[in-house]
Image (tube, rainbow, N blue to C red; front, top):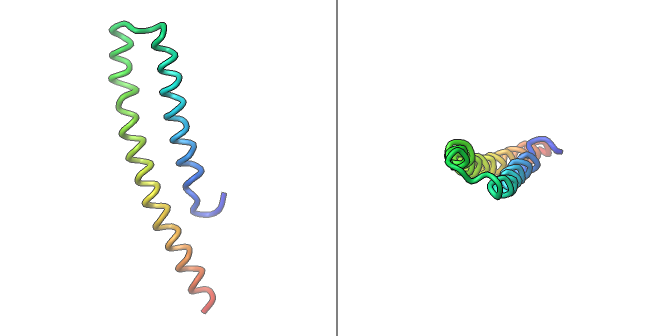
Length: 78
């Protein structure tokens, strides 16, 4: 992983959310009572928007870091 590379971590985070949703679907095949619904509402649902916001922020930060790296490397040649 190169300096300033955020894509690896972002990919892992996106994959973890995907895997969580897959595992949750499997779990709800046998667990579908009131407690399951409450667990989903309290623990699973809040993660999706938070992870998506984090991924968006990481994307914006990656652009800034890429620009900074280019600017620094351009100024090194002077």
